[in-house]
Image (tube, rainbow, N blue to C red; front, side, top):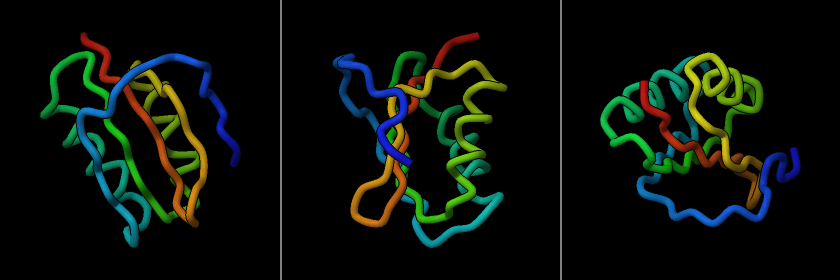
Length: 87
C-alpha cells in the first residue's frame, strides 16, 4: 500500500491512535469510539499492523462520511489520517 490519497493538503494531527497488535474488528471499533470523542474537523492518525485495516478503514470512512486524507505503510506499520466530518 503506497501513499494513496496524499495530495499536498496541509493539516496537523490532533490525535494518534495506536492499534498495533490488534486484529479485526478491534481497530475499527476503537476508531469508531475515538472519532465520536473528537470535534468535527479534527484529524486522527491511526497506526496499525493488521493488513485488514487496508480494507476496513477506507470503508469505515466511506460509509460514515469521514475524510481519509492519507494512508500508507511505513516502518512495517499501516497509517491512516482521517478527518472527522460533522453530521
